[in-house]
Image (cartoon, rainbow, N blue to C red; front, side):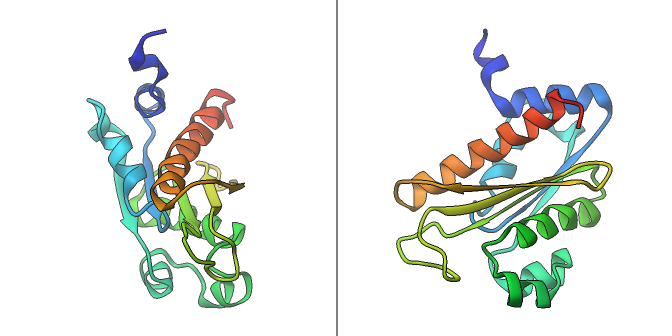
Length: 163
């Protein structure tokens, strides 16, 4: 298998391009890394609508439409918020697919969650949400890099399964 075929971002671009579909990101924990990875391969402009880095709760609420009540009750490091971010990215950017990342990169607990606790979510064209929780080891950079790879592989898996 060539390195092009092994790179999840390249495969995502190829699959979405063949389907005529698009993707957008809403990132907190990864602070734009997912969008950077998705826009690196040639042809990305055909399928990547854009991304929102929503680090603060008010940005999640004001730009992505994440309900403030949801943040207050579930916390920013939650399946609910990751899902609302992914769906908000779809809506804001006009994409069929949305990706959301949120978590505690460390070194301290965040929102009551220990370092390395991560939630990702993929929002499908039908509006179905696929949240995934991970507990990752390493420093902030390790957690962010791993999360970026995990959500891209999560999207690719859903694309391959025709979700």
